[in-house]
Length: 175
Image (cartoon, rainbow, N blue to C red; front, top):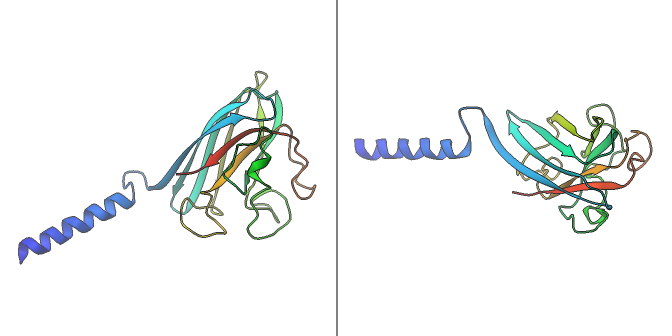
């Protein structure tokens, strides 16, 4: 009987250990790779990490024009169109107005702007409790969406997408 109880406890510990990475609290992670769109030379990589109910996106880009660029999550994980249009519009499961996530009305995909250096290199770091990775909640789950970098800045006002210009890079968010 004692052997059975010990075996059950070991099995429970293994299951719990498989569900989380106890050393850093990260419960889920997705790596993404961007491909150029709209005849651009933009490339990049990124990572989504979920930890303690927050998702952090960190992404690095090359080949952009120096200046300010918008980045958004779009509704489909399809980057097949040359102009990125196959990704659909901004991810907006709650049917709100376009804006900046975390500051009033905004789509769930309205991340915001980032600035590149004089060589066209840029980094994005964004953390929110509005997303999850593979949780199944249609209003929070980013899996099955795409990440789009735009040619220009988001004005946070123009509806429905912020007037940020062409889609110059795309990555599907898939496990």
